[in-house]
Length: 164
Image 1 (tube, rainbow, N blue to C red):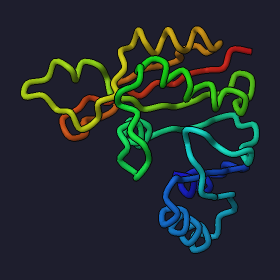
Image 2 (cartoon, rainbow, N blue to C red; image 1 turned 120 degrees about the vertical axis):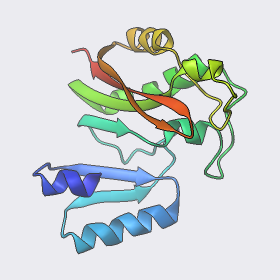
Image 3 (cartoon, rainbow, N blue to C red; image 1 turned 180 degrees about the vertical axis):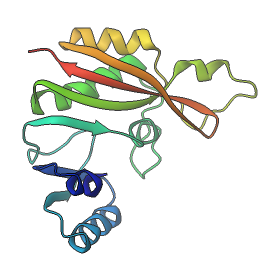
Image 4 (cartoon, one colour; image 1 turned 90 degrees about the vertical axis):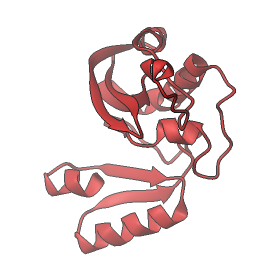
């Protein structure tokens, strides 16, 4: 995604991944594409101080999976879903510019009613849980949309805005 953004003129791009082989591949691709960006290995649930202030932060394709422990990290499936989301958003809020946007993709709680049950990603959130967390942290929901289906589980994309 960073390379795509760089090729469209976006600047001050940074990104990280939990897995070093993914970081290495991203660095190689960035070099081949002749793009300028900072890429490093980090834990998305407890990011290092390398983060700066950003107008846009994306958390797509990985949060719900990582909460399940699918990257060799500890599963968080036995923890409170709303509290996990609040902790996650709190980690990134100081790095979001005033009026900045945070894109986050989550498994929707409607998945709990699917037949047959699908439990690949046990951490799920309702729109109300996301709205509660956003309000508590000074974020507004700018947009929410059904994003795609992955392994039969419905994903929602939320665009949250830091209220200045």
